[in-house]
Image 1 (tube, rainbow, N blue to C red):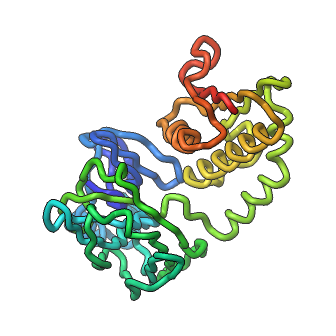
Image 2: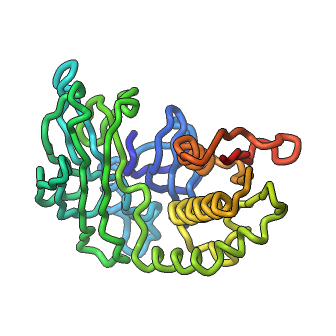
Length: 313
């Protein structure tokens, strides 16, 4: 089971698209935009044969399963050719058609290594690389345009820079479309529509400072910032889980920068427990931040397991 697969629930009427796979736990985005974590055994793939049966229903009959579009699922994948040499593939496990170009930046020069059209559910080999020469790979630059024959809200053009490090090549996993084990990197986790992106930017410029100043507890040495979306936005019901996460992370980064600029010695972020995604993204960012001395779970008596304390330089 891979990201982008269409599935239905065994014990309810819902159906949706797989957006994350974490061992036996699968996250499925259903029609209303909510993401539901379920065990693999609780869902089944919607097969081609099943789709045909639905298509043969009477025209006036209500369809049992709505047609879902897989809107995310663009990857770079490294498949081993031997112990050190790998083939790099670009994968499109979505329902979009993607005119694309992939460039490399090395020694202050940029050159194109692949270009063309990635049709939905297809892949293209980009190049062959050696892990022993990883430090010479340079920076990969991806540019993609979303295209579809169906009406859609235009997403922003995907532009992403990716520099790989040795510690990222730890565990191989099943690669979508290719059916082989390899190192997999998703590149479209933070794609927003142009309109949504503009709205979020406006909200951030308008509200982030007031959010920081109106934290539950503020003093010269400490501050608490609540990142629950209902504390940040009055109207958030129409945002997708990805858009909500991006908004929360933007507020987190603005507040962290503001705390550093104002000379605070510590700050606490309330992120909740949930599925752990927001906590993981926050920890990933602060673990490499040059102005962070250390971080830890905040007082469990006060926040449970849903907050992170950050000590600043």
